[in-house]
Length: 252
Image 1: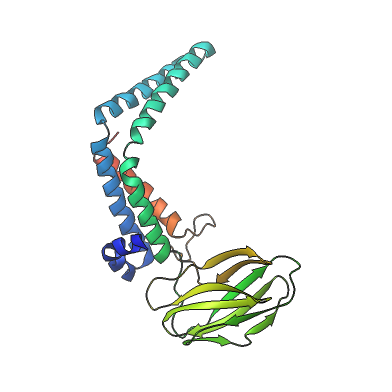
Image 2: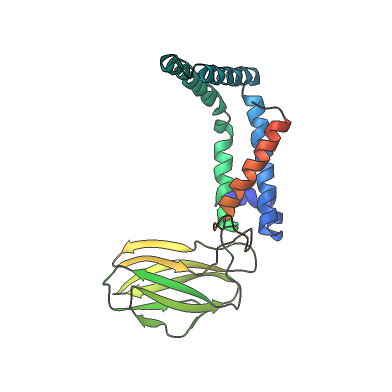
């Protein structure tokens, strides 16, 4: 993909680090760029004045809490000023939206799951619509081997094939009722992988999913039962870094 070609030279060295550290560094770099762009694309004098107006209106509303009609009028002014502030604050998005989408695509291709490693067994599971019957056959290329039977009977809505192979990129061919369904597989010792889940939704087959484990940058630690993936981790760091940078650079 284009974004991988452009971003690999920049971010690939970070893949050698612990995922938590790598995502934190990427989040910090992106936060710095976005904050600097925000500072120089927006009219900071205007943004400061609008914020001060909003605070003044909020203070006035507290003082008028016993006069609902007057509060409504002030509240309308708050909404209008808030809308102006939001419209101006969205201007930097025009400069950052496409690069951020590209970086998110790169992160999703390298940080969301652990890779399938050479010599290590993994599974490919085919999920079917309820009531689907018959059998399905798996065919692989050289360098990739099926552990167990290559033809299986469909039971309980799914069929699991176990495989292992050498480093390389392969195609899994699933044959059912004279039709074939292809799933790409990448085996590597690097931090990358092919698409983990392929949505089929035809001829009784719903999805074909590989057993790549999701990356949990925080390890066993969780936030109130939530184990953040790469996106959740990025958002957490982004909020922290952006708040500190905006405060340090006195951005409104």
